[in-house]
Image (cartoon, rainbow, N blue to C red; front, side, top):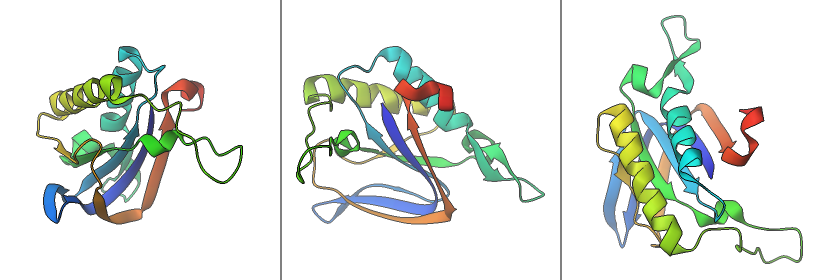
Length: 152
């Protein structure tokens, strides 16, 4: 799994001009799922997202987690995070999981994040043409890959 995690003061997702998810202070998480991903990858990433300390404390140091500050998550499925760009100018997406695997894993990620934060997770719509708006706070943007855990 790959995730692009952006600390935001606000973020929203629209599909056909209708808001499907909207948050204030928290994380916009773009999530890519590949065929090789496992339940272990999902659990590891969910824990990392919720416990990552990138929010300011009383000394304005990044010492607080999303859970510590009562932050929210807007979770967006994003198969393009697995774009292969080595050959030609048109990206290939063969590493991205097909919907029959990706949808259940995306839904499980929603459940795990909700359980860890004890609150509802805001979402886009899997496979839809989504319009994402955000105000990146900092800016703080973290990229994580569960297949590269030694660097995280």
